[in-house]
Picture 1 (spheres, rainbow, N blue to C red):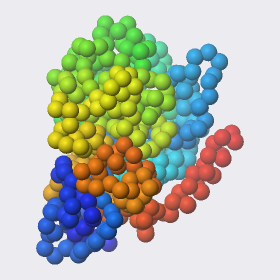
Picture 2 (picture 1 turned 90 degrees about the vertical axis):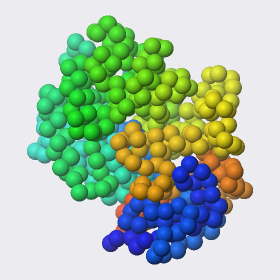
Picture 3 (picture 1 turned 180 degrees about the horizontal axis):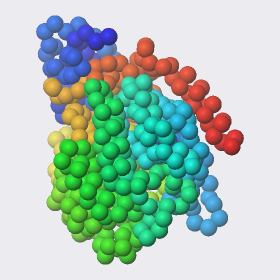
Picture 4 (picture 1 turned 90 degrees about the horizontal axis):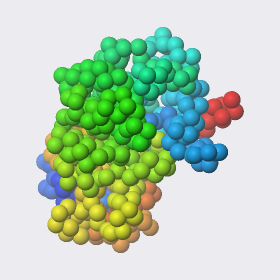
Length: 469
């Protein structure tokens, strides 16, 4: 049922890049109609003791990895790093059936909306059955993920991955057989079918994701990037997450992964480099001149011991930034934003590393405004979507924060953003709207959505089955 035109009047409103008191947010047909004076004909909704902020965006997620949360936090004999973690992830990936995939994705997306996330870029690379065979519906697992997102109510861009090999010069190992495509054409045919599946749903879209220079031959990446540009699809690639990846690329191609993508013509404004940690100064320059977006995933990068994204250098070079929850070891985009800054503070022994050149960007909330932008508008831009600032014409994707929550109590207009971003807890998120439609109400699933208790109960049953095997 369509939501009637409404004018939401909170105590504080962060929209269009600034915080206002006593301003209304008017929503008509799922979009922002006006900010400030209410649109004529709107029904008033008074939100006393609340603030409205743009919805958060996880531009990079692997939803199925929610199933290994808490099961990899051990030190194995020898070196415990990304590669040993990957072995544990492969074990989970090898046993998930389509219903398990749905349960894990629905749990992930439910947790996201409860944390104020209104859009997700789902980097999906689990395509085949556990024996490496194609399902009767070759896109079944991707559709399960998309169905889970739409049931929860989160906006999704399904980034269909391309995966050809285990590493340069080597056939895939058995644990990777669920990921493998036979050709670039197979990837494109799958994505066209998924685009048809999403057609007519304003909350679903698709994009291309050659997994990495490790998993895709150069020619695959070149062909797929050209097709993404032709069709105006977002294009995402894991880039320089691990030193070993950089070394393998140098051995195969004589250049760094960034240098290879530049050679292939991939570096364009519509491209997103995921991670981009182990970069040379030359790499940073290439990414900046191309005005690409870099999607940092600090809580996962910290959990895996990947390293720290050189965000200051990337910003200075001209890159945009977005944030993602990646392995979903925790789902809190505010934590991703504060970790992006916090990791750099520890590394450089100074504060405000990501503030703009003036140091304050216009006031007390300058740094927080910039970081919040990475977690909102930066993510939407990475997914090829409008929005993230609550400006007129944008989708009405927004979060209602309780100003009486213990984590933000006492805040006012000048310090709303620093308080929410650096100190806000997920408990402060009370209501979440996607396209003007409530998906969280009063801290719980909105009426008409599957109750959170049911989502969690079915996920627990899935976990018992998976880990009893």
